[in-house]
Length: 103
Image 1 (tube, rainbow, N blue to C red):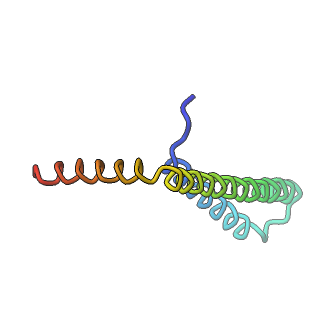
Image 2 (cartoon, rainbow, N blue to C red):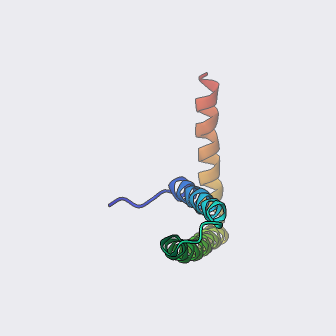
């Protein structure tokens, strides 16, 4: 199975937020229905929504930690290899300049 890209993870997290929000609204709209079965289902849904919120929060914390770690690693590399970093940036800039000038 392929690993998710950052954009895919962000889209998934946004979609989960929308689903949670919609489910919460549905629960609010059905609050006046008090039959035993409805109350039981509402309880299960509320429990699962709480779990989803918790997992979403945990996923965000992990994503933030990974982004910070990647930033620190890049910062360390640049400080340990300043000339390589300058050369790579210059080469990348030259490549972008050539591509832009062809248009």
